[in-house]
Image 1 (cartoon, rainbow, N blue to C red):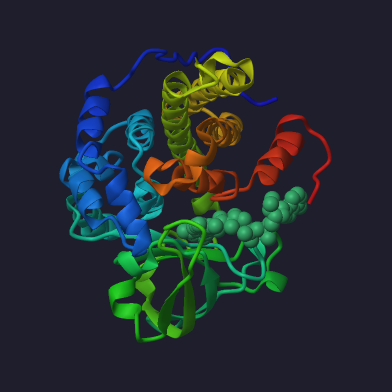
Image 2: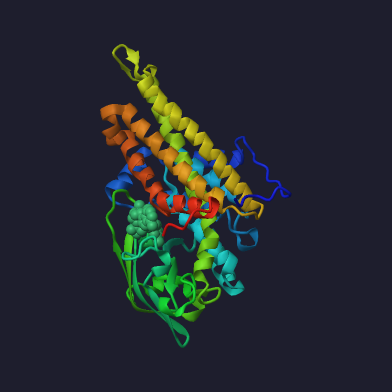
Amino acid sequence: MHDAPPDRPVSLDLGEDFAEIRDSVRRICAAFDGGYWRDLEAREGYPTEFVTALTEAGYLAALIPEAYGGAGLPLRAASAILEEIHASGCNAAACHAQMYIMGTLLRHGSDAQKAHYLPQIASGALRLQAFGVTEPTTGSDTTRLKTRAVRDGDHYVVNGQKVWTSRALHSDLMLLLARTTPHEQVKRKTEGLSVFLVDMREARGHGMEIRPLRAMINHNSTEVFFDNLRIPAQALIGEEGKGFRYILDGMNAERVLVASEALGDARWFLKKAAAYATERVVFDRPIGQNQGVQFPIARAYAETEAADLMIRKAAALFQAGQPSGDAANMAKMLASEAAWHAAEACLQTHGGFGYAREYDVERKWRETRLMQIAPISTNMILAYIGEHILKMPRSY
Ligand SMILES: Cc1cc2nc3c(=O)[nH]c(=O)nc-3n(C[C@H](O)[C@H](O)[C@H](O)COP(=O)(O)OP(=O)(O)OC[C@H]3O[C@@H](n4cnc5c(N)ncnc54)[C@H](O)[C@@H]3O)c2cc1C
């Protein structure tokens, strides 16, 4: 099993780390109550005011180095920010992608690309919120994706389709994964994929079409179609054909951040469930006095605390530059499941009122269910654990 080598110890902070940041995030979130999110959902809107408040406070640039106008904070700080946003009843899905997509640009972009884009992303002048990986016909089998980018002089010509591209209508830039060498011509299926930073302001209407995709939750989902879109060759990030590796590099950070959001959701559900179980009196006693009501909440609490530890472990390993894939994957799975169990307990505890929109429980319940599917589904994580950690045969 590959975990931290014993000669490079990694320590965990078990208390409320980044307390000042957490406190400040809570204060920002207090201005965006359930009514704000319910209203947005009713009109399928984008939380512009919320994203602006986070941007102005510098939190969306937490991971951008100071040299490029960001805060230069460690991954664990970003994890704490996202946890607090979700624990406050808000939803960071509108803007979280920027935190981890940006890493691909930071690690593999040219000096010119970084100097041009990162300061503008840090200031909020440009939004990098769209990440085009998933395609309708290939799904989790990412290396089989069909979108092609073919070099033509100083340009690449892009053809294909993406699906579930969140926020494409609210982002200036998109990180796009496309095949530059056909699948049949590469030795390994992970080769021949490339990453591009597409300026959607120029692309829309010139070979890129974006259509909203109505979904169970207000996630600003879209389908993106490419029909002979010409993008400048300078849009390529790093080397042609190495894109899959670049994307994978960022995935451990992404797993930790999404897990942190799930953890925040779990905390929101638990607080809400425990309070209602204590206040609501039926048969002349608080419903929480019944073990059938109390125990699912208590069990979800224990799962949440365990997920918290795994998130801290993954973030600490990542920060120490040690292999963090095992912990990051497990953190994502455990946190998404803890959140779901907390959501179920909370909805059940609320009885019929769990269905009343004004309680926000049903909305959060729908929102947190996504964490077991995107950005990677639980089965794919189990397959990773089976194959890479337990050394069982590859299952797909
Ligand atoms: C609201 C929302 C927002 C999203 N945002 C983005 C985004 O911004 N950018 C982006 O690129 N994508 C995005 N996605 C896509 C998301 O990452 C995919 O839906 C997810 O990775 C699963 O892929 P799929 O839907 O094609 O499922 P499939 O790959 O078709 O899988 C369907 C089911 O079968 C299971 N399965 C498949 N193969 C196996 C196997 N070999 N063994 C066991 N089980 C298997 C999966 O676990 C899953 O449960 C989003 C999705 C949603 C719903």
